[in-house]
Amino acid sequence: MSQYFLGVDGGQSSTTALIADQTGRILGLGRAGPCNHAVASEGRQKFVSALTDCLAVACRSAGLASPRFACACLGLSGGPSDKKAIVGEILTSERIIVTHDALIALAGATAGEPGVIVIAGTGSIAYGRNAAGLTARAGGWGYLFGDEGGGFDIVRQALRAALQLEEGWGRATSLRAMLLEATGARDANDLLHRFYTDEFPRPRIAAMAKLVDQAAGEGDPVARQILGSAGQVLAALASAVRPQLFQSGESVRISYMGGVFRSPIVRQRFFDLVASDPTNHVEPPLYGPAAGALLEAYREAGVSCALADVPEEKS
Image (cartoon, rainbow, N blue to C red):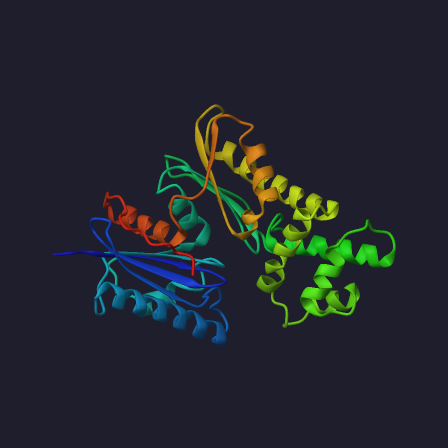
């Protein structure tokens, strides 16, 4: 009789579920909206809807009706503390792991093997695990006190540059005009106040990091400096995690993911700094976070297998 396993990546922009059997064969994929909050009543409703919707789609894709899982692993943005009880009400599974999104991103990136991953999307974090199962992190402390090198931080610095230019003490940069055109703001001061409203949630602001990359590609020195600094701080996060888990001279796989790394400048700066240590092997992820969650479900159940026919996780 087949056993079924579930991996879920619940993020700030979408939720992805993968169902597989005990041999590692992917049977179904489901996607739904974000599920990063569950405390307030509205947040709880959105969380339940996202999880039930993506699970229903995955089950239909797999040709299964209300399966009982041998093990399910859910990696959720914002942490698991406010979601464990809700998950238990939704899923039928012999074992349920509710963890954070950095762990499943690492598991997917390295196919469950030891290593370090640096994630730079709206925010940023570095997370690692060694062969003994010990873990460490650096960053990921939110937009007020951390998330250096993430998309929100990049746009915040671009807005600062625009404000300084407008006030007459900043360097010349095309970032001011690009940000105003993209948002319809009258000036940098107007844009600043718009960014404090609900009209511009943090993911929307962070998505404007692509404008900084565009300006840098067109030769803007301020934009290039902002992106180069982002690559440098992301490399520093990886360098902070590595010695906590691995010996000097030990070969370590270091991976990266997130929209910020689409910038050639960020990616190259990160690669140059991390790869300056020849024992660091900098590589893109092997699998996405939902596949990583699936691998963690296998690990918890004591099942050893390789994944097959893994679909692209991007929506």
